[in-house]
Image 1: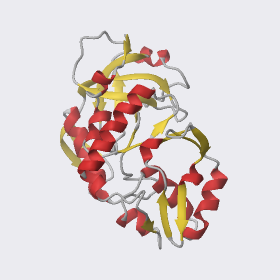
Image 2: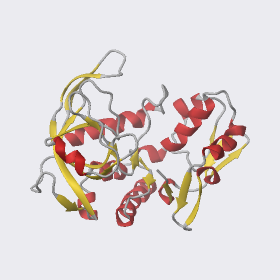
Image 3: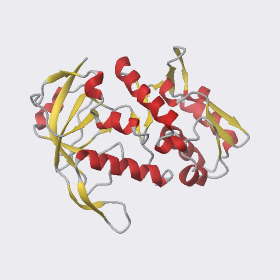
Length: 278
């Protein structure tokens, strides 16, 4: 399974990173052209926003909403620690990092850019003897060195799989998720995705309940319009979001694995059993 290895530096000053997104500057920007999909979007500083493959940490600023902040902050702190970025100072509103010892060395392993012009990346800190721009084979041993895997294994992210993630890598991720859940690590001690949670106001998902970020995003998009839990399934069905249920090989839609009983919402499949289209 060939990927491209791109060396560069990680940057947070002037940005608002979270646990699964950070800006990256390639040492050789011509390497972005090797990737499939649309071109990577570079800003004036030649930084691009990465999308971390397979993981989703709690939202800190989605459409002016956030999830319960404890684990979102822990995930960001974990990412910065792993990348060696310290001395972080935020502006008074805690919306932008104003100072940090960033520009730390690292590399990504990637093969495509997604529709929002973000490279879909496995993220690694430090150096590697592999040549910049080389084609590499990503096996599960190397996968475990990635920040992606380590964040999942620490219980600070949910698995969120999309088409194109190779099955052996996905299975390694899922094994880490199962172990973290069974140990009750971090967010898994409070997760309500499959147990169910009451939705009596938008605050139930922004302040109270820890749930899969994918489900959170759909709920706040819906609830912001003034709807009640009773209408959420119809709203989600109209989005027509395709999924594959791995355990059965059944192609269906996201609304079919969501159950609403009164004002209680829950997913009927664990997140690692789903692969989303897109």
